[in-house]
Amino acid sequence: MFDVAIIGAGVVGGMIARELSRYKLSVCILDKENDVSMGASRANSAIVHAGFDAKEGSLKARFNVKGAEMMPKVCEELGVPYINNGSLVIGFNDEDRINLNVLLKRGKVNGVKELRIMEQEELRSLEPNVSGDAICALYAPTGAITCPYELTIAAIGNAMDNGAELYLNFEVSKIRKTDVGFTICSKEKTIESRLVVNAAGVYADSIAGMVGDSSFTIHPRRGEYILLDKECGNIVSHTIFRTPSQKGKGILVSPTVDGNLLTGPTAEDIEDKEDRQVTSSGYNSVLRQAQEDVQGIVFQRTITSFCGLRAVGNTGDFIINVPVSGFVNVAGIESPGLSASPAIAEYVAELLQNEGLTLKENPDFNPIRKPFNAFKRASLEERNVMIQNNKAYGKIVCRCEGITEGEILEALRTNPKARDLDGVKRRTRAQMGRCQGGFCMPYIAEMIAKEQGIPFEQVTKRGGGSFMTVGKTKEDAE
Image (cartoon, rainbow, N blue to C red):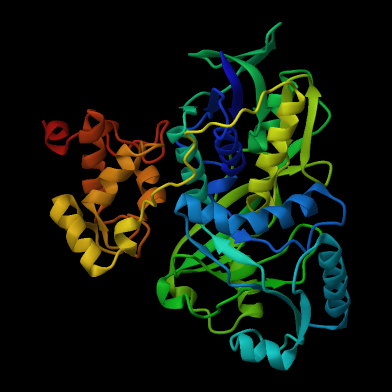
């Protein structure tokens, strides 16, 4: 029997698992997908928000500000990129100015540091490509960017390195309360746990319903993005927002930690919790609004577009409570959930302690994790040493991103191990360049097949039935 079972291997579930691995506990993470970070954590804006947008006194405000303050240390320990680039919320008219002053006041109440209103001349000197129609901006120097899926993978990997167990392709179908805890069932497997954390994203309401809690609902909000080539990465240096609406912070334009330019997301409330289609209307909406805010974006340099789903609760705030003894909901974690995740993890540990969990420190806990992209970040001298020690680092597999065979093998062998092509992509950036895997994908698939001891035809793009081939052409011809 586990002490704690966490349902959901996104950034929040991962951060909770890592926090609990600091203590002498048996912890498992359950997820229905073939890899971690397959929900909102794989496709979002990657922004560490300063904390001025959330309403005063809300859980969002409380955990956003604290989590953002924790994030530099967390990212450093986990070997995840973090850039404190600051953010700008631009206004185009007097109504926007009024709303920006509301955000300024709210941010100060929330505890955000160094917030101020910036006038047009200073804005243009700081970001020359911002629209000439923008008359002012709210400047948040503490805003930052990171990589959401790298952070999730690293948090769960660090938790596993410190003793946590990961069960993938474990779709929870039933939860039964027992005298000593909970029995959690999938179609193929059953586990026992004293305590349960529900961090199941868009399915958190369904998981809560399995223990009789129908106090909230979750619906997905589709957000579509456009990612541009690294040639466009220096168009802006800050994250550029437009004055927000009720549905969110609108279309942003931001550099990424890898040097690309990201624009989006849209905000469309939908019913289907698996609908991640990229649409022409969504693409055009992102294109139009981004060009209104920032001049000179060359969308002909687009390398991909993608869609993420946000888990929107019906309460307007994060839903973190204990509806049944021993069962903790961590639901409705939409934006600023990434920013808030380290602080949420600490709070959930406190709730579990209140439910009878003993938090005795693990003297062997190691918070440090080697980054996946250590080779790419290394100096020429350091790379030469790595190649001398392991010739696989001397063979380039992904030409667009300069990713080596050694890095891919490391991704296939390091917790949590990549199990499919997209898993390798998220850990190494192989297949993320201009050709989007056109050249390197077959070789990576061959590496996966060899490492896992499976036929080439069984390698998938993202688990499930996403097979890349149906058979060998010469066999089909016969």
